[in-house]
Image 1: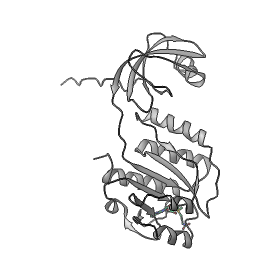
Image 2: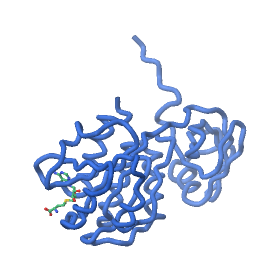
Image 3: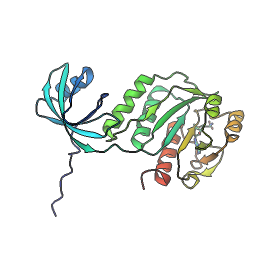
Image 4: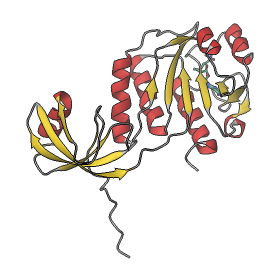
Length: 246
Ligand code: SAM
């Protein structure tokens, strides 16, 4: 049986544009995006690619003119509706640069809606370059065919994070000292997963976390995982159990 080729072809380039898209609209991209299309990918007039604006879904577009500094495209037709990613927030203690970039990229690929850095007593990195991380979020969304962008907020200290929690939202606290086994601990509904720093939470912090309403301590197995591994494992388990992998 001849397989029907996917449409739009998944081989088409995908680009996020920070401007509202609509049929027959004309869009220009400049700087790194123009360089990427015209010089790196050697694309020119007539070539097609996929665009998304993070709000209105994905669109097929065609290049009208490709210069090294500016590429002009016309939006032809919608190809996919805006996805509704599950309402999952990943709250994590910042870790070293290369590893936080990796964590953010993987969280986007797995479908996390929101990222919240949380500064704890043993956090070694308390400053994050949010612009750089937002660029990573866009790149990961382009790669994994998301139509929505995960958001990332400015870092919060743990006490402010706990104070700002919405009591109606489940908080899953990844605790290597013990908790309910991750997949079966999850119940459907909006959720936040909290991952600690390399040095772990202090006893006072763990007690403060366990004292908030609607909190469940979860275990990610018998081994001590690195923070970014724990984040990935917890998000994957949540997506499989109650997220959109069903
Ligand atoms: N404090 C620990 C130590 O040094 O023994 C290690 C902390 S671990 C590197 C970083 C974070 O990952 C922890 O704070 C926890 O949130 C999460 N984590 C790691 N392994 C875990 C497990 N097996 N179960 C639940 N959470 C885990």
